Length: 561
Image (cartoon, rainbow, N blue to C red; front, side, top):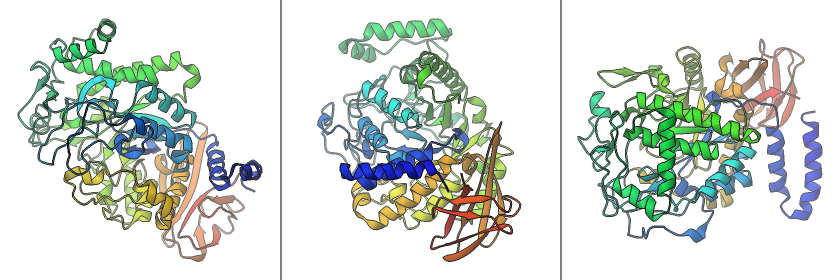
């Protein structure tokens, strides 16, 4: 039978849990952890990545309050709500991500944000979202401390979960009463981007009052007086200057704006061992800057590994995934600016966020899966895309009214490529919040209360957990090659091979309730024992098929152990 050791461990655990008064929760955690203990290689091409807004996910330290006296009234969902780094760590410790099958977490930037608020047409707003940097060298106390980040990374790694930091090289935060503009040799404040040519997409300000870093410049610049004064007040001026001196001596780079920021960003790899970057606003920066960032990030990652050999998870290189707004897998490797095409995969990116799936999701399963498998194993061989259906700044997500959360899980978690689960996808968190303007409607606080109390939410969540764990345990799902085995009922296979490792799975979708026959001939031979992880049933291949008898319309088949 499947996982004999697991059963023995569970029986032992249930006995001990009766004393602990939390039998069901603890038993579920152990089942999940046992299921994860397989010798499964981690593959970025098929990763299951959870994306959350740091301020909107979970409050770990309610005592910290709002920092910098940021208490002016804001528009709906445009102020700080208390989510923090400790809150993420808390959920890692509880096993929330493990039970969801997540093997990497990406959260919005945590560097120190502008202190003032601003109104650019969507109501008074503070930098709760993390994309308005004031100081790349400090962590914003609204989100936590350096010790908090250190603990988060170590805790995640202990669970086999990678950490992606969200990084911004393109711009500073807006100018406010409390936040002066950076010097002219650092930033441009105009013209506003038009997005019709390469030039007016890169050498421009993304929006009004968002000063654009001169990332294309190689001209040496002095540090801003405001930043020097800040460091002096905080008692770390000498340390920061000494570190910069060592960085520029080692690399030989000119003291141009992008190299300062690259040093500051890669410090988080040097110091904490983060596994990758999700890079913001990629197409608004000259592409060679990304090669520079990747080179220094890789150097920092390898340096950290040598210093911390006992904390190294595997030999995967540093990972960078880029947000090239409106890039889609359909276009292959290149992004078209109108007058110039750029292959960002050639500039340090393993993966790009794929904006096509939310449209492709309206098609049938086989059309989607076949297309993605073909492109990922031809034009994009060795690279990947990060698929999503909802996100923090896409006002036209798939299933905005959350009417098809089960189907959304099937599409997102079974489509070839890496998957981006946006916080609350798995709990049908509402994306339509009354009184909000713009992106704020996508960024409500995580709906923990609904998960605790609503049976329908719990049912949706359980489905996401089952698919997520299957994806995590099988690189074949996201990184393997797809093949349809039967049209009706719909059955397909995925196969992944690398070196001596081979992974094979079969999935059935839109299955009839009750007794059903799944065709697996030519993939699994007669006499092969399989295990359906969805219904937790062991079956035998007979005459090229397996028989299941349950009320589920999905089957997730793996080799029985």
